Image (tube, rainbow, N blue to C red; front, side, top):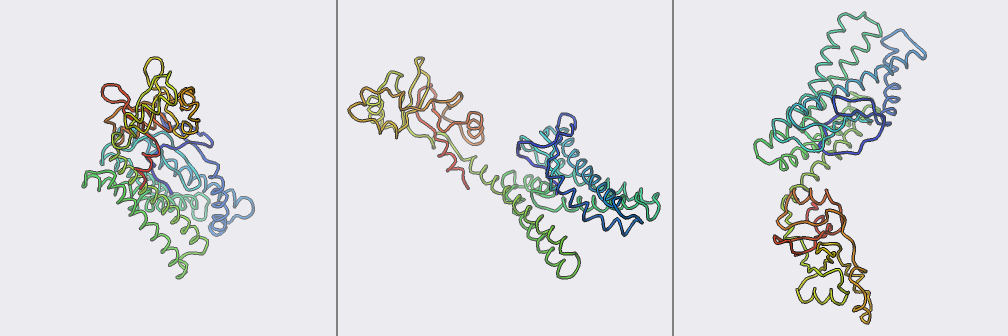
Length: 374
């Protein structure tokens, strides 16, 4: 299984090289599928070629390597098309289920998204056609003819399967692009294509059950299809969840989510800070540094734990949490701009300044998370 993934992902594994500036990784999980494929393909080798013993498994392993190369070409096609359309890929990853091409950002237009998606299956069709044509020059019963036939068949299957109309498959990206063009809303299109992917997943499992019942496939093949269907269902669900999260995020406004706050100087005591908050009708207190900039936010629970007799002696800084760099935002932020600002400066809480650079509130990350949760 292979699909273009439009989310950044931490990479690990063996670095094989690059496609232009895009690094290529081989995950250790691929070796597991190589062993399984070698074991499953070995009986076919014995039927097609008059060879037995260790050579049988060597030929079967050669097919596993050819399929890995085919998946690499598929993903490289995604990466090259993405670079040509202005959305460079960040990595190509080959793993247990085939591979994926990772991006830091989605395509900027429906047409570009469709182009990047389509070239993957097309590359496999080209390989299948080339292998099929080469078979005409290979001797019957030879290892070369067997590997060419297997290459043609497997690439045709990969192309057709990836063209199925549902996320996370390439066909789902095409559906997403078409619906995006019609609706004008990429996120609504992603929800539609993700739900279509769920239908494809259910169809894959249903086909596996039918294939076993009719003798079309052996049980081992059906189990594999069921596992693929499960992975498709999970991938489709993640796509729908991510799209719905972003739909909610578009509606997030910092002015609606902040807690009213008051600013106090670095010399303020706990008692003074609490009095200032009560007088201003605020629920949060921001402690300024000696230059008048937000430096910390008072922890309400810690402040409440200070005995009343000592509240006028303990400094507000003693019960405040320091703000990391960048944890100061401005009113008016909303949608993806707000989410990006939070991602650029991770913090549990943020001081919020008004147009006149005066503290007006505190934004709690958990409040944002609750708002955007589906």
